[in-house]
Length: 249
Ligand SMILES: Nc1ncnc2c1ncn2[C@@H]1O[C@H](COP(=O)(O)OP(=O)(O)OP(=O)(O)O)[C@@H](O)[C@H]1O
Ligand SMILES: [Mg+2]
Image: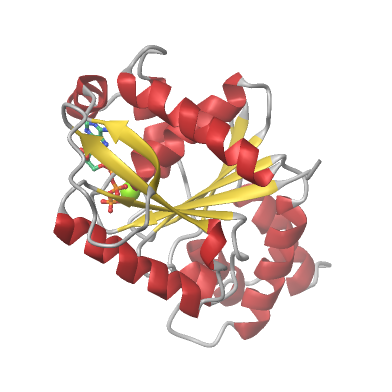
């Protein structure tokens, strides 16, 4: 059995990446596959809100700081960066969260990036499941700050335009070296089981219904990961996690 696997969630803006990523984290915690590492790789980060935790800094902002400020006496910059890396990690009940921030600052941070990449790889090895909330361009994958995921979920609505965009994102994935068989289509916010046939033969791995509990969490600002157990989106994401287990384990 594979010891660690990573699932990245991508898709165009507003399709439900963060919602699905946070419900996946909740599912794996519920199944005892913890601690889960939640990685926010979207520069407009809000994975932490969906998980109900506060983020003080990102890896990107820490990198800027660690390279411009003076470091404590008796410590090398390398040691300092390793120490600061652990401090960026937010620890919570059943999961830890790492916010990546912007992939690169204005200066040259090759040394820092290499160190952070190395620290990220080492960190990843200590979690059974890693869930990454990614933006559509997947810049952190292209820059190597996060590795090629074991599964890349591409989220879309049921519309033809959205599904064409999903296919383009799959092409970006291919160009970054993500094998086709690791990419899975997820159709979100489906009303009344209405899924129009797609314009290609890429069948969805999961269909997630429009869920009033998700909308109401959004309205009240409650963490979406905490919607009730029987909520349709939560149940659908559990089925998705089951399907991913069959593929990945
Ligand atoms: N299954 C669902 N049922 C009802 N509302 C949903 C569902 N999935 C997502 N939403 C709503 O759609 C909006 C966008 O969702 P979310 O923030 O998860 O998308 P995103 O792809 O992460 O967006 P961004 O690109 O801004 O990061 C939110 O208001 C969310 O509440
Ligand atoms: Mg999001």
